[in-house]
Length: 549
Image (tube, rainbow, N blue to C red; front, side, top):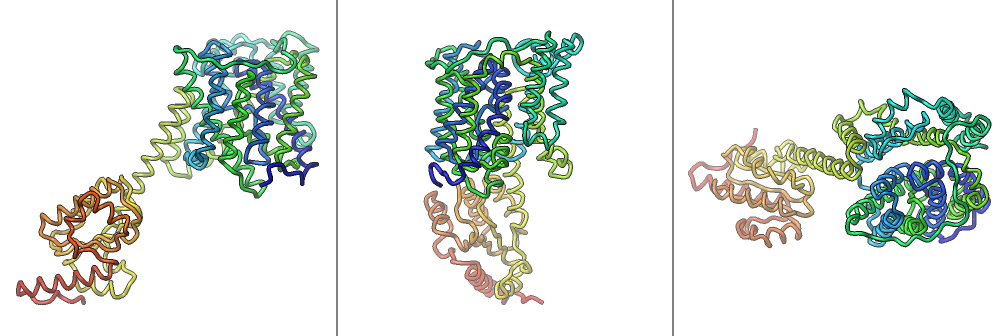
């Protein structure tokens, strides 16, 4: 990918212009919702949008304030009493962490968060945004910070509404939800709602408005830390960094699907990190890849870095010239726009089909959603990932031990099948179908013991499809070796790779198996087992093993 591609200048300019117009009301709304003010949202879109496009790894991506990032930032802004040096220290640190993620090539790991966790997390954020804006729709400010105080303030706001604010909010909601698509190609619904609602508020005053909005370029803010706030700042920075990385890389995947390209995830993280670091130094709220704005950019012709940079330039021109006009915007209009944003973030597509999918995935999604809304975002993601991992390990373990013992009719090779048929109950073959998870290893010895009927003279462990062993699996093999020795049975290992054998040797387990009990493949092990059974039968005066029918 070229660092700066000029093969689509006209499309990039048009895409950037359209994305900038769409981003304007959202940036103002996110800035107001964050507590830092609408101008902080606008400059967040400008700084992050420009630098993430310039240095990022997704050509068509538009970056700026997003719902998830604003929810976290608003929480830290409230917890630190709006102290700029402390609040924006968290933003700077988050940006630096994202750069570290990219430098150490962690992009592919961040995308491994399971879909039900992402769905529940994003849907929870959508619920939070709606809850935080519901009271403002009725002309009231929520009492206190956080989701629960916001929810608690809704009944009082409903009982004593500012009817003018409610009318403006209702008008805004009607526009953003029902704006005709053919008009949306020329005037985006959020921009139309903002203009119409502001015009209505000017003609019929009485609803709360933003008031004075600073003009000009932002001022430099020196980040600071204090002993009392260190934990809050670091916790917020880690969450902002992870959330911004996940949000951006998911948007990059959407862009890839639309443009038939492939983004560079680690480069994208570095670009996002640079954007957020600089944004924090100038008092702007953090951002990430914005899916809706990216889709609009692509649909109107944007493909490369120039589109995102143009989007930022459009917003900068508006910030320098039209900031005084923003002071007339009513709070209810921004609340209506954000309620639509929250509605769009909720994963309705999955919720409509969830009853047809795995029940556990739906439970996991609901758990993460509830934790996101009523506890905190870090707990929601951490619990969701742990539960998803444990559920996967459990399913994998059950599958691995389900067909552990190999019957002769399950063997594809005719010669092996014939040997197994002749040996019947004298030999048991246990085949491991891939890497042994620690979940399967925990009960592996028990399952081998359970599936052995006690009459076998030889046990064969087939490791042909096992590329490696961890400590849990190795200890399970040790248990099987000890059980076989105690029962007086011979134990053969077939198809063990050099890595597998090295682990068993390193832990002293290979010595207990013996040098003559290792075979290159299952056929050799079966042949040796047949010879051993026949010898044992002859010595006992029992003759050869009974042939199969």
